[in-house]
Length: 145
Image (cartoon, rainbow, N blue to C red; front, side, top):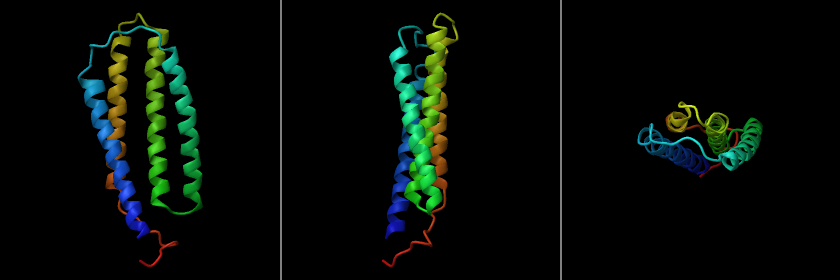
């Protein structure tokens, strides 16, 4: 029974990653490509992204250590989710940094869309990888149903 629920959780996380990736890729990337105006104060967004990176990195390390303690699909799925969040935070920080330090540069207009495309592609890839992973069995902790 536990394995069944762990596999369900794994598929739900994979679907969430995939849907988020499609949304980010289409709405944040393709539909806005070249229409974003660079500039403005991005300091608050940069600060929030840096704090998010710190928290998500901490959770990713925590779930990595927990995963080494014993097999669990839920822990593995959570680790993959927080790794995706770390990568997303890094993309956001990179995009906001370009806008913050070079607001007048013509490339900064495209950075937001490029960051969204990169994040969307990564989320889609993570979702696919998580979904395609074969169901694993907890042989050490298997309980009768």
